Image (cartoon, rainbow, N blue to C red; front, side, top):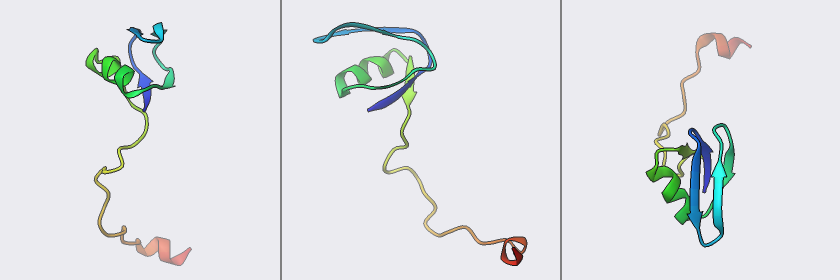
Length: 67
């Protein structure tokens, strides 16, 4: 899972200890992602597959039709 780190965080696990700084985008396994999200130190960097998308396409404005 890709996360955008929003606060400094130190994570320990099977791979050892890792620290991340704000502004860093990282791809981590599910267990590490859960730790970072639990500490409120990061947010998902990729959109969720089931994100609410409009069911119908946007209607074009008349100005768009002329160009």
